[in-house]
Length: 174
Image (cartoon, rainbow, N blue to C red):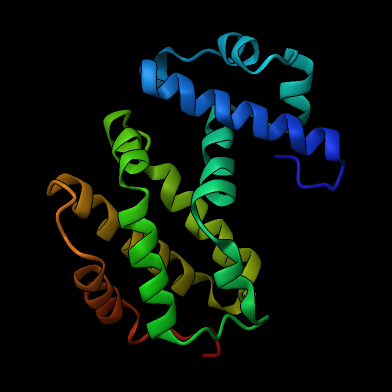
């Protein structure tokens, strides 16, 4: 996935991501071809492949750039955000984006949320906490999935309580 600073490339990535979201509202992920995605975004296949390696990368890009505020994780180089602040923010992230998560679940691509969260922690935290990053990404993805499967009825405060229990032992400095 392209991570540079070129404004034209970034604009194309955003066009592709918006096209993917639009198509997911109309059809199953498995029915979205690269050709159809390029046509919807108004870009060439060559441009697509210079920016993304797959349509799954487009979904990960969308999560990281439109839905999840990675700045929350990146506040400090050692990943030492106060647990309460992180849990509160992530709980609101889940509730505010429930429709998108239901799309991921309905399209059997919920694992891409895990990948997105894991990538965010891996690039933001100390590399020595790889195992904990996996546990954290899995736990947060599981909480989000349960929220969707149970009809999206939990409040941010309830989700925050679940996350607090998960994160009580998480510390990148160990």
